[in-house]
Amino acid sequence: MPSTHLTEFQSIPTSGARGVEPFDLDGLHLLAIPQLAYDVPDTPVDMNGGDSDTDLLLLKRGKQGYEPFQRVSLPGGEDAEFFRIGDRAFLAVASIRTGKGPYQFAATSRVLEWDGSSFVEFQSFDSFAAKQWKHFTIENRHFLALAQGVVIPGQEDDNLPSRIFVWDGERFVHFQDIDSKWAYNWHAFTVDGQHFLAHAEHVGPSVLYRFDGERFQPHQELADRHGRAFVHFTAGGDFFLLVARLQSESQLLRWDGSRFVVHQTLPGLGAREFAVVPAADGTVYVVRVNFVLGTPADPTTDLDSEIYQWRDGQLVQTETFPTTGATDVAVIDDDEEGLLIAVSHSLTADVRFAARTILYRFAL
View (cartoon, rainbow, N blue to C red):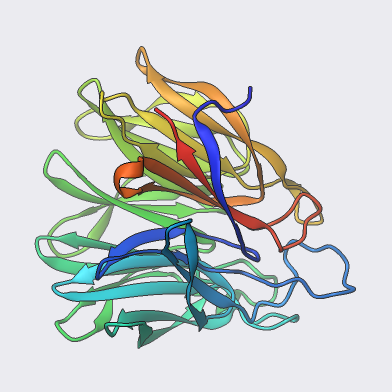
């Protein structure tokens, strides 16, 4: 089922790309790409190997596409999150590990600030297997949440819970810990006047938290395990939350006024991220990218990812497109040229890190 919506626009050389974050700043259209690892010559294939002393890539939109703008030494890059506080601009980067093996998961994750011409370090945080930063606001309060952790036999005491920080006017300070062992992601949203924060967890339940004005309180379980990411959309007057799961089938949940209930199960394993593509006529499209199947010792990275369209109260898969170890997908409003879809690939078909980040034109 080849894609009719996607036409390749640009192929960007990256290595172990784990995310793609588009944003606009001071008249520049920028793209941040964190990188997990570089290939080490003459070493066996290992999706968890490589040299993780990597750089964050920053690219700017030029006449022919995105071109190099800045490199920042940030090892084991897993995620980049752009946000603003007043007239200040920040870029938070999660670092999962350092070294070339054995790896150190007790790493430093950093927040960079724009100084008018480049990003420079603003604040650093102790982290352990950091996966994702998420910035969100509630009633003019700025929060920054870090999903982190990994289960390593013999190192359980080194693991850290996921953490939420709050802006105190000068910097981010600790606000609340969220129980976790192997966390991946956050998603903040508001429905029926209530502020929610979804937390994706791999080895335990992914939990939805509700802000009660003082703390984030557990509201309900969203998935029993294998959580990776979330996205929400509205259709037919209902509010929906998609839950991506790597080793279980992903699910579409519907808000019933007090809780989320299962509305639809999406077949297939390997889901890593979703993105909602807006259409002027109100049609909802969803892009799903798939990461790997199998085991870390014997992974399959050469997978089809999918495009869905909302039809008659369901998400219907309309087409597929090829990906290899896809980790993230983002929608870019490319001025008057229409929409771009950016997909980061962390592994090649032969399980090497020198994969590419691909930008596609999206035809509605």
